[in-house]
Length: 203
Image 1 (tube, rainbow, N blue to C red):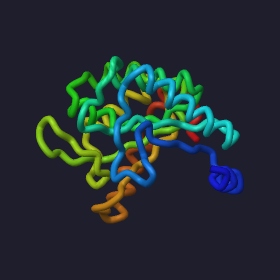
Image 2 (image 1 turned 45 degrees about the vertical axis):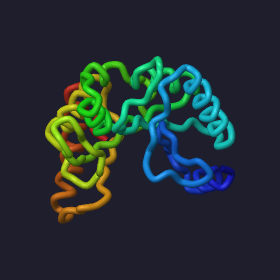
Image 3 (image 1 turned 180 degrees about the vertical axis):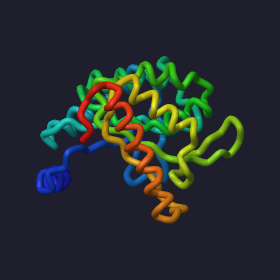
Image 4 (image 1 turned 90 degrees about the vertical axis):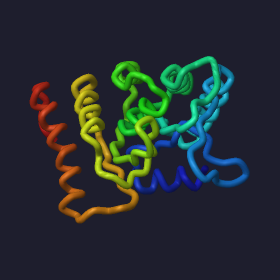
């Protein structure tokens, strides 16, 4: 972890985030594995985040992840997320696509979820495309174009919470550069529209 601190300090990194999930067990796990949504897990994870922040000497952001089997526990995903972020006193890395994917996979109201996020702690956001396996199963691949429904959710997030830094994720099936930049431009256009609507200066 001290090597990571050195790297972040040397390059004056403005943000460092991690997924709110299992990531390893004496080695790297293949995919992001959801943590049980329990009070016990809240305290355990929050303590680990606080330790990382102490070592790194900075606040970090925790990202909401896409899931394909609902974790057991007395809390739902949103309650778990808010409890961990509050207890750890960390920032929030908002993944717009993951909210949408989970709303399909687990049958919750996507806008109700968006309205309940720890918005005052948003560090920055991701937006991406995903794969439609079935009507009720979406897979977070980062290998497809961003769907209109996900663009709409980003638009609503800016309307609710103001403009925040947003990164387009694309891991494979990379389209021609002009197409990729078209999605980047769409992010910028949404941001500019909401800045103008709020009377803020366009950066």
